[in-house]
Length: 368
Ligand SMILES: [Fe+2]
Image (cartoon, rainbow, N blue to C red):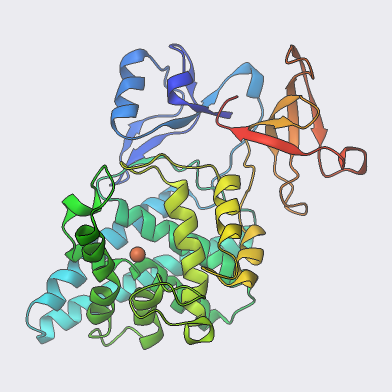
């Protein structure tokens, strides 16, 4: 299996991973033979990269970090949850509404516990490129992704179970305030005006004010909504607090939030690949993000996930065939082109072994 840009896809290629819609229904099943009409539809739905199965990539497996059923369930829970919370807290705070909010918190906690036990058991580098979805609303799947990344980062931090669970709830609910923002602004294809940007920025405070009213939500969790756009250097919003004034949960969450945002395709900009997103995090290390969190996050994610096409500094091209969890950023590669860019009979090399330590990946893409 390998990752390929939809505009590089040819009729007759076989889809390697099932594509779902936001409600978890199958849109295109694994094994589907692709044709022009389907490819056009995928692009129209904002899907620009897919996994295909072909001879060149035979035997390369792309394993879901979280089983797709669990991920779909989490998206369902958060979709219902965010809608219930925003409709009940904006109405009168009667007993019935309080009970509804309580139920939401319990179901989010439950699904997050399943995500946590899954990540604890597997302890692999996270690759969410494989969970291709068509979005009705970006906030829902983004909230689940941020919870997955934050959970892994919290585990790397060695936090107590209670704290990890609070971070999970905070991550799932961090953007609840966006439910109050005009979707036309949130999904605007072009650059936001100053006024529109100021409007979007309100979601932190709105989210906090919503969550602090819910009895079952601990205050540090509500602070995740308030502080996730704060920066270590004090140039964030809404309060411009600095360094240690920012809660540890939010320091973890802001790294996960930005990583998922830039690796997701949006109407106003295309997605970047994980290695580019990591560069972006490093450029904000010590200013936007706490350096320790960026460093730890590097160990949480698959920088060059299986199926990605890469170019080495000696000119050879290959497909990442296996991620080396013990050697971050130095995977096994199936070489498909030699130094002169000529196709060769594929063979494997492992960048983590001593003999290949001088080799570096200089380029990575869905297809080169
Ligand atoms: Fe946000």
